[in-house]
Length: 356
Image (cartoon, rainbow, N blue to C red; front, side, top):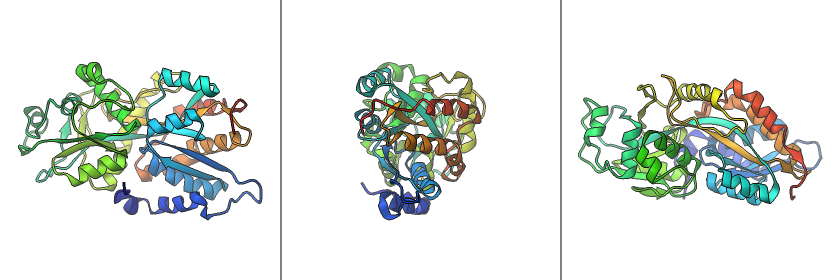
């Protein structure tokens, strides 16, 4: 599927990065062995990772090739060691951790950046930004609410003339961390969703059509009047697709933004476990956007001698110097209170046990 129009509009510098990372520039490492990383997964983080790859090669002379294949594939290829590490918007399950442990030992989760997943829609004649609630979004994706003028939607949008038009629901067809964030939220606000659908990077959606990647869902929504889907904030902004406010835990309708995702991240700090597998959805606080999430690098602790330091250096740069590039691409920086814990996780990566 062709990259949607946003790639030309927003990421000129990132497209330049793609040329660099595929071998159009020599390493700046003074004649030593060229450093390379082959990583992939989350489409959520693709624009950010493309920018990081470009800036990192300029700063350090190391190539980073990023494959935007979805979080599910990123995890599986990391486990199989066909990638140096995978990126996912959903943490590995206990079962996946056991599978990885049997293959090559322990795994660490390294938070990279935070962002918002938004209810994006196309509805001709409606100019005002729409409001949604978690239960209403759950019922739409359960197939219980089928039309835009349903009383439950109208109750959240007083004064808006909503059409008697069927909602064309779009969801991800591939294993997706964006899906994980979305359904993790729906399971917290809808008992029926929790019971009948559950939480995973890949679920059986009761309603709607599937599309591959954030790009695919954005394209479907942008081209179909009456459509509603979930995508990462930058894909909505880059394609000029309207997206709604969502009622949070405190009863406030919150617009997805850098500030509201940061508020959710800060609210979650006290509940982040030692393994750094956590959830930002439905966070407390009046300013918190409720469908926020993290992208993790998921990395084997045991690494080949020729890869260990390159991986450590890149992850350290991303979680420190690389954070300066987040806001321009509408991602939220990691909270300062999390950085020290991330540094300790990165320090666990060592030489030993891996296959080159």
